[in-house]
Length: 412
Picture: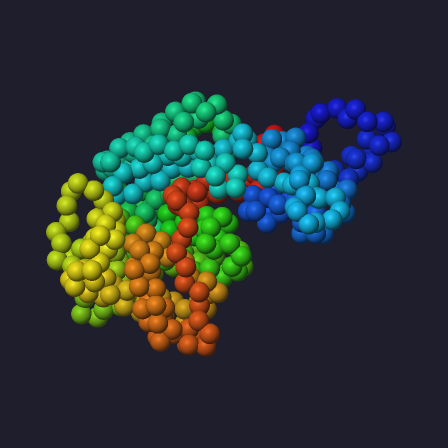
């Protein structure tokens, strides 16, 4: 635990050290409970950990000494309540941060993310993504390092979100098709080298952007409280999916699970870059909407923003409404197949799919219910993702995980 001297009498200090030793293994679980908002008070922390109140108090005090959480010993009691209110627990607003980076076909962004999934600072980078991943990742790390200098925050590590399947354990971007990067680029190794070159502390990680969005939403957003969470999203190009099982991100034997973009939903549809035809990837992404609505994509803004603006601003036009309904039906068909296979307890949608849900939620839910066994048996909640920059927050979760696993070891 911390190396601070204990000013209390010898007997009392000995008792406290015993409690701390007993609670050492509870530091990580306790921090995760506060991090995810599931332990807003010391009383809840005590119950969730299954320890004594004294041990929970010692654990909370140690996490506070590490600069990770804050303990409010004098919270105000709610009106009409009786008894002494429990100490309130919250993440330290001035505590350490993780460097999060995201690269997509229309640019890159860096952010500093604290515990609780709170974005402390963010900065966009270039809108042109070079074909050399080392050049791009060096630039985005430089932007993040600048944010760290400006804020003076301690960095616990770095995480990267990329629009590609990332094979484990090597960390290879297998299909960065929309980035013009070479297939199999060792993005994790390159990212780690750039982080070290910038003189930043902590380990570096990389993963698929939709996987990271699902992880962030499960811990801090629309997926909180679910056990088996399915996330499907379309960003600037293509469609991705992710699955959280029993509270843990399921990435398969080599990191490649849930490539939902290559589910066929229109046998007579557009050719897909995978070699198939009518896949979700080309039938339910922003380009598909613009094409179905008879709109030529413009170079002035991202395809996602063009598609969102079209639905929000011109949904009353028959051509736009028809294109939107067509995409909703294809998305619903794909979701129904996933529900039959995975039986999730919640579905969350991001990117353009969130906009499709908002445009006609009844139509989408009806298609899923009509085409899925479990949908007809009771319905699966379908919700919109709620976090801004959820892939960035998820990238930070990768860097925070060693701290959540072992706060003392990670911050020593």
